[in-house]
Length: 358
View 1 (cartoon, one colour):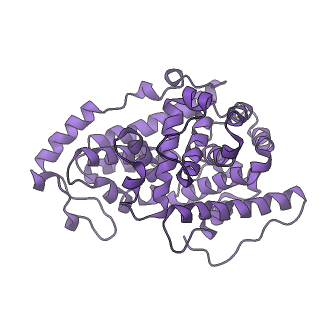
View 2 (cartoon, one colour; view 1 turned 90 degrees about the vertical axis):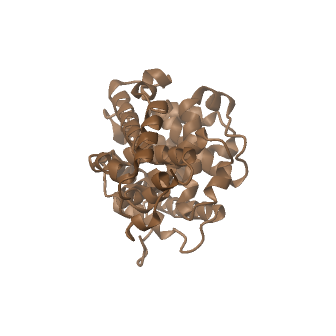
View 3 (tube, one colour; view 1 turned 60 degrees about the vertical axis):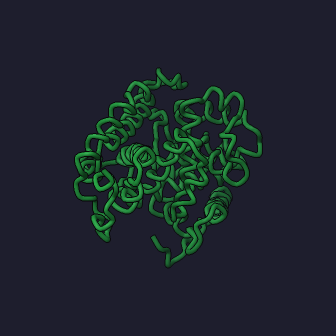
């Protein structure tokens, strides 16, 4: 049985290519997982979640994201190996591909926990999920939200600064599935305090974008109900979700983004940091989106590639700990603050620096 479900590391190419087909035991077990843990599409609908969405167009956009996530999740849950999952991932080309990879990452991580010796999530991050690794790490956070054990202990087994995005995913999961309690009582997962709480709140901020239908005023009012000390991290998540996911009322998105910047007030740089992270996630994956470009232009006054360079410029050249991740965010926030100050005073934008690594 061990030979059937344990990953043969020799089967993983140096470039992270998919594994060779799994054995019969793994295939049978994956069918069991697929039936027992399948995510029903109605669980992602606006009506089922009780989200406060004001118009049909925004509802359709947010529900399409949920459908893409569920597609990746269900396909990966039933896949005994990455070769079987590959057609689903390849068919997900386009601006919504990241959500498919996010769902797949969640399912792979859950399957690994339930299957002794299996490490398909690691292989996914190194192989077919590499270009979408921002979203894949967030997907791991969804899994950690549903599995027993300490999230931080699980993350310390990985080696990437992006692993801390799993805490963002954990926070998003709490807001998405339990938003009434999260917003009403301002709760976050009790086991995550201190520095980790900042990243969890980034995820909670992202969830507000979905819960309140991508409506700037509603999102800002909900965010204001949290303790002031949490607002910066929450605005970071709002910027990330708005720029990456879109869904804002298409009737007048330009004015809507201006309203969001105004609502962020002193936390405009935090909003900008989220936008820069979204731009970098799309740049890395090669799946640009018009709504991301609009967010970059309205918040930072930059095209998306230039906004992505801000995130890359401050990416630590060494170090993968929580403090390195938080310092990365702070560096991006500082540059966004300079950009936004210069624009507000009609000065030249903060100049880009050469020699940025990707």
